[in-house]
Amino acid sequence: MTSTNGTTWKFPKEFWFANFMELCERAAYYGFFIVLTLYLTDIVGFSDKETGIVAGVFFALLYFLPPFVGAISDKIGFRNGLILAFTLLTVGYFLLGVWHSKALVIFFLIIVLIGGSFIKPLITATVAKTTNEINRARGYSLFYWIVNIGSFSGKTFVPYIRQGIGLEYVNFFSSAMSFVALLFAIFMFKNFDKKRESKSIEEVFAALKRIFTTPRLIILILIVTGFWIIQHQLYATMPKYVIRLLGPEAKPEWLANVNPLVVVMFVVLITQLMRKFKAVTSMLIGMILMPFSAFAMSLSQTGQISSDELVSVFGLFNMYSLTLMMIIGIGIQGLAECFISPRFLEYFSLQAPKGEEGLYLGFSHLHSFFSALAGFIMSGYLLDAYCPDPSTLPKGLTEVQRAAYYADAHVIWYYFIAIGFVAAIALFIYKIVVDKIDAKKEVQNA
Image (cartoon, rainbow, N blue to C red; front, side, top):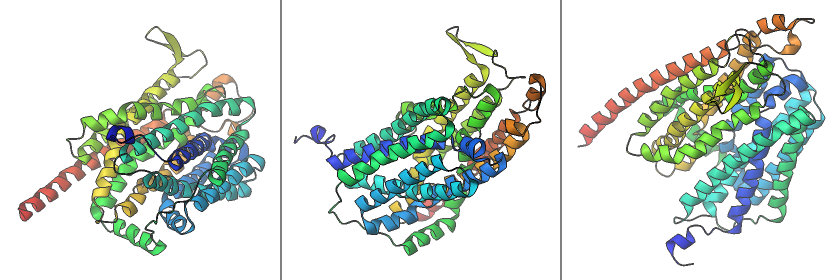
């Protein structure tokens, strides 16, 4: 095909192999991610507080390590890096399903952490290498869809495993998906002949130092951390909150799927509508939405939650009031993400020195490092205080006595409403200050 339209959808087979491996990896990751706090508490025996710390450190490092691991993968090659990553993930997930002592689980999580840290820089770099100026935009668009399809499918399938044969068996599902990707990396994926400009560990540290010493960037990262603290509750608080109030038959995994569904449906439209506005303006709209997300979730509990507390949805069907308000709250989160995430990456890349955009973007998820630490640790303490682990309650309680321990469970979301409002106000002030600084620079340069 010689026409532009004909060639834009033509990609080398390595592109499709990389996307298939990403599909498997995302299904494995999100299937594991959504039930990790349940696994750490119900199977391993960590308290809610301990679970918050373990999960918080795990996910924080998963966002922090990729730029450093990427520097290593540059030296060993794409294919070797993928084989190493999927081997570690296959083994790590499998061992998490076999042994459940606390010390061993932490060690196995480290194996998964290292393997997962390789994936993002390797797959995104593969997409970059297998596309050109004509089809790169469509290539990344396909990649983004694959990520969300993997996320959606993993969380859709996992409840059948958790409820059918046991929570710990979810790890075998993630191991199997990683093993399929490993087979593709070994037998189907070819290394690239093209030379790739690599960065040393020293250069990565230097870039991180520059980010921390650039006030405009580090302040924005800390402000946007407020958004991601609330967003992380989809995995930190929501699964336990839903199951403890509705019972083990509930499917929080399906509720979490509302987020990627909304993002896929609206992100292109919202990005297009906001294209003439400054990046910070778009982010501000998203930040304003976030407290309302937490507020909707707080309305999920009106008095005692029981199995017959159903509400009619437009007269079409009945649904638990908790489920309905969770869907609304998570949907608002998805809309907020459409306003924030694409424009944050755009703004972040524009602050990088010329030629270092890629290195800077490697640290664009620093907000998730901070928010995972703060959000998961907060979640552990809040769950312990307002929505405790049923195994910690006194024995022999009546249903009424048991319900009393969960009467204030919705108060958890008030803390995140406050965080959302503070973050939105901070970003509003940030926008005013930055606009004044930029206007002054324009006058000076005129």
